[in-house]
Image (cartoon, rainbow, N blue to C red; front, side):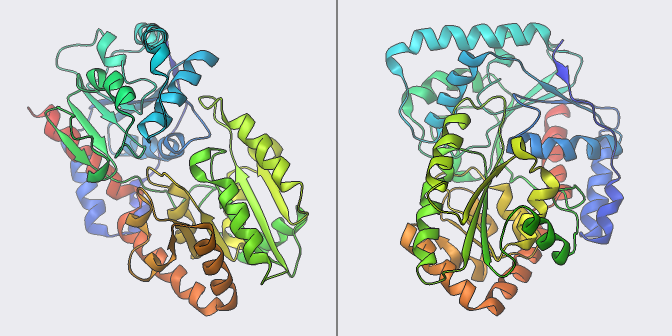
Length: 415
């Protein structure tokens, strides 16, 4: 059997102290309508990625609503995850190895067949996340009444056509597909129900819970950062789409005007991302040229609580992505009232509206200019932080995501 992630229950009513109580009431009512429903999320890693970040909080909340929710993780070897990382990149517009397309197809389908045979089939609804397990439905032996939803978390607005042609037949076997925003929906996708919904954060996790800023600065300083230095931080996977070298270049430009500037590059490794090790090494090579650049990861003891501390202790959070499905780290930072400068791509502009949209950037030079401006005008940063927290509270907390997903599920199981 596939690995089921061991999780408990959370109390949705905790959100009444920070969120719209009417929304919580709506979620509770949906749970009551779907009480006893067997629902399973499937993805390819239990840690290190945005989907895992979501599910570790999301599944316990579903259980508190009376839904029998589980999370199963598929297995794969290095070759399989190299293929699926290639598909992930190609969905975001990177080239696809069409020369070896048939070998890729055989390896991809063979792995999905093996995982389909090991899948616990006893659910009413499966939600399949991203390209890695997209063909499970093709090989499944579940009951005809079981509903299957495919959830795409990447920016698929301009996919490599060969890669999308490869995946589309398996996606179209699902009963519904979910994308972060309308612009991500491929125009040639034919499926009976297509909806959009954005991810969300949980403010009660160790990554987002409240910690006094003074304590956060102390933790950061214990890792070698200067007491009186300005600090900017990028938190992301070690991935080309996060543009880590663009972030370093923007820091270097800003440092010419703010000499006491330090940069923290914080990332995590996931078992389904074989490219991350090489990217980590390349970032380290660049960082070693400057004593004020620090590279931290979950391999060196920087976990969720430390990320929380960095996001609160930093003067600015940078997310200079060149492609981005959503960018949970943007909402995480804004929840902590830390101003964000981010790439004007994908799902990031959904989070940075109003005055915050002035800090969406397209170039290294533009990013550096905004860094210098915010460091020179801390009152503006404080105002942006407050506005950002209000946006996250209104739109990007878990009850809203639960409402959206359960509304979709209810529409499927009632037909």
